[in-house]
Image 1 (tube, rainbow, N blue to C red):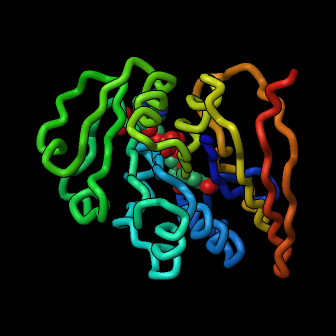
Image 2: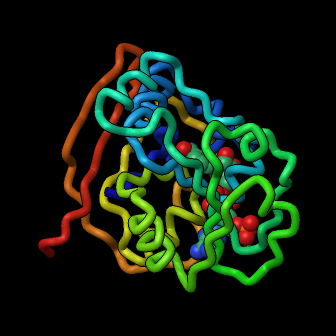
Length: 212
Ligand SMILES: NC(=O)c1ccc[n+]([C@@H]2O[C@H](COP(=O)([O-])OP(=O)(O)OC[C@H]3O[C@@H](n4cnc5c(N)ncnc54)[C@H](OP(=O)(O)O)[C@@H]3O)[C@@H](O)[C@H]2O)c1
């Protein structure tokens, strides 16, 4: 399964002042933690990794115990997707990761000192990249964005599920949507789950409809 998780405002913004934090309330944070508990790989685009200043992955004891009880390693593996590999090897999310992160790259950029903190996996495109992840046993992939990576995955029709949190907020004009970059063919989805939090946050889950 490749699951993508995003939060948006009612009027479709994917960020407030360039970050998703201003959109994310308690219900979204709880979902975020829950989704991280279940995956083999936590995939993130280099743009989001850089702007959101990703921290080293930490799961509390309860979630680690849940994973182990379900036959998973204590931590998922961070998979960073980049063409340029303009990523600092000193970034704590890499240097202090509980499991050696993986950098999936479609380019031929020099990894420099990144190879000391992460495994660099080269692929021709995201389709073959995801296939390589699966061969490494990373079956359940949770992608936390961002918009360019989401569009690239969707262009290749690799997205099986979208978890979308709609925050009760009008963010106003300016911010981008949860998808960005090159247009691709529309992908029909089926609404598979709806939950409403007390503060009016809507938690939606959509599955890719492949019968059409
Ligand atoms: N609302 C939400 O839930 C949410 C979630 C995530 C992010 N965001 C927001 O989104 C913004 C960042 O957006 P973004 O679109 O720049 O982020 P992004 O999609 O995470 O990053 C784009 C970068 O990912 C790499 N990439 C994407 N497709 C690739 C491919 N096919 N092959 C190799 N590398 C690929 C490239 O990295 P290189 O440049 O290194 O080559 C590209 O520049 C921030 O404002 C963040 O707050 C919002």
